[in-house]
Image 1 (spheres, rainbow, N blue to C red):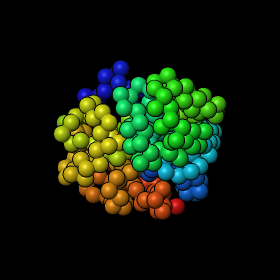
Image 2 (spheres, rainbow, N blue to C red; image 1 turned 180 degrees about the vertical axis):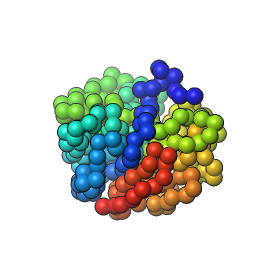
Image 3 (tube, one colour; image 1 turned 90 degrees about the vertical axis):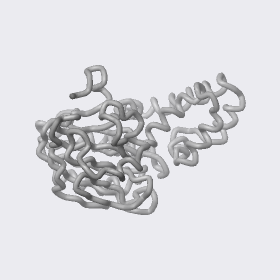
Length: 276
């Protein structure tokens, strides 16, 4: 069963493209992203799709320049005749989730603890890029909801002042897929940030797509209607791996390793893989 119409904005149906180019977690590594973009540009053709597998920012310092680079490459690809905006998809990773939650920190019951956890998960460089700091956030948390509201409003205003940034963050999808979720016979490919919960159906994964790395590692058979599940981030950092039913495109980008890109058929078969 395909997601209900009210849910379609959360997912990207990629159709039956000739190739899907999937880029692993960038973590604001701008030089590596530029190199991957150059490689994709030399290969990309109308009828292909491009999926960024989440964690566009986080850990790396040049968050603003990374988002600008993503937007610039999108504009370049859209100059190709026959390409449509829906052919380029950005997935929500844990970093994008934390950034959105940080902008609503005044509604958290224990904002200081939440901010401390986010900082330990790598959100601080994104926070600094948009003119904030953890110290400011902790001080605002001690001041109460009104103080926090003013602080997050300032961060949001700074983000909105950068052309396209708020639009990109608002456009991230939970997952992208070919084929039909929960089809009787697996035949498509599912693209996620970090994992899935194999015990939940597709439409009830919730935040498992960016937090359930352990569930992904347990996949030893097709999940739902998908021949292969592809992810861009492995919290356990065990490197690039391809099994009969999964593919992990994470060589440690943001932690000293390269950025990985893979090309897949609409059934999830691996056509090509490279890194920069």
